Image 1: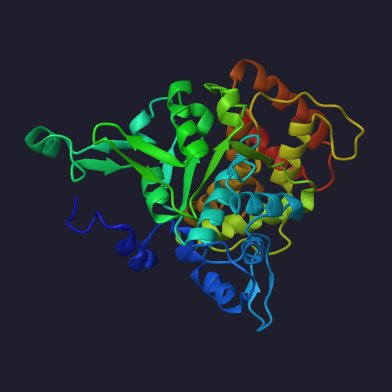
Image 2: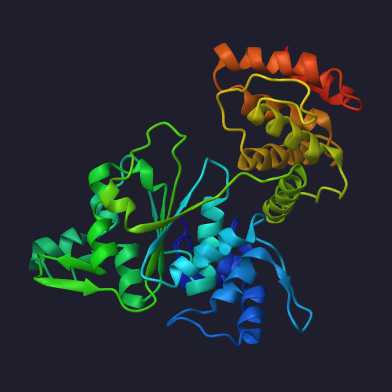
Length: 375
């Protein structure tokens, strides 16, 4: 590892031009600055923007000076307004939805717009310890000098409490139940006791917490009723229309592709719409015209997976083709996304391919590509 491989958060912002995935407060710094300059509405204490400006940042719009704010979330405005309003109260926010509904994306942008920092993050897994939510210890100092404030290693949540910022907890329901419940005192009392020191950390104004969760994946641990009561829950739905989903996929592929030096997908291309159509029909169990009922595979076939399929297809076209995205570049990715359980999903996919794709006008190249990959 090079000497420069590890940086502080501030140094990372300075090196954002080389980052594979810059933090959103860096990637969208110009928009956030423009909103802050034009924002004359009341702001909760320690907020960088007013609730109105935060909602505008997520949903997009045009400012008085002509600055265009690109939409970060495509969906009902009221959902964003409720989420932002929750953060302005003493209630924590739980973003709930099936995989791929942009829960993480929305939480990251909310934290960036409210606090200017989306990095106070705890990633939930089956192995996440309670210390990740509370605090840990520098064991060298602990053994040498005993418990002290210098030996204490604050968690991102503790730092957010002390600084009046927004903390994020991803995949809350993947954490064991006893680890989840470490949040109860933090969210109800706004206090984090440190019994080893006989002290506590009290949250200052501006502190709040955004958690994300879904109840579709395996390994989910349900939230206790005591913890769920500490949250206002906002359910993020799947994109309402094919046009919305195509727009989301196209925007995210462009954003992901820039640091990877992938060419942009030309506007009006049919390939993104094909992937979105396939995923939506198999998710819904019926074709877009409502005439043919379909069996659904075991996978979620989310918008996030559609983004991944198109990005991978664009990389294939760039490095092993002529740079133009075609059906053959997408076929393997679609097959991999649909067939998660070979015993059942392959039957579902073959039936869909032969009864729907084969008969669809203008889809013969996609049908042949999928047949070749699946042969």
